[in-house]
Image (cartoon, rainbow, N blue to C red; front, top):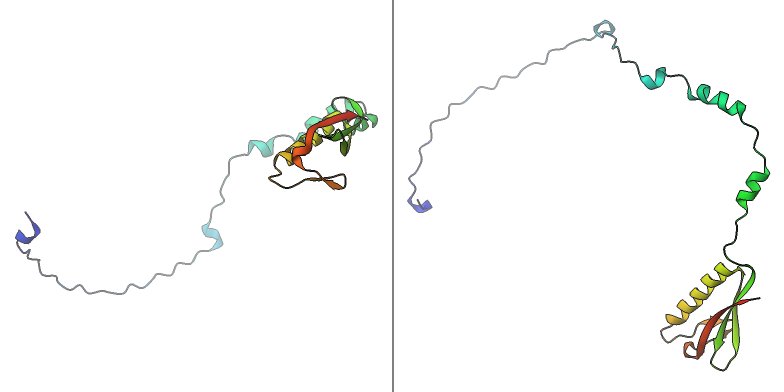
Length: 146
């Protein structure tokens, strides 16, 4: 049926209901009204303290030599050691020194940064060794053993 064709619905009469206020009852609770609660034993708290288990092992080990830590603190350089220089070679044969490094690996990282800077120049001239260098003049970026 379409909504326009529905017959009216008759509703049953509603009788009023009287609302009666309810007074709250007051309950007093004393300390004797609570019973102690028994908690299950915690296996972690009832186990012996960990230091008691570890202590005998520590007493049997020899003392640590302080030179052991000196060896750990000194970083071991990777690759060849010495002094290395990064040089930008220009088309006229001139070399422009752009950095000096303590080892070959660090010098290689420095050379990669120089190459990145020239590659991303976008019309600007990077500044190295007190001069601006036009990117199209660069022939190579060399890592030289000093």
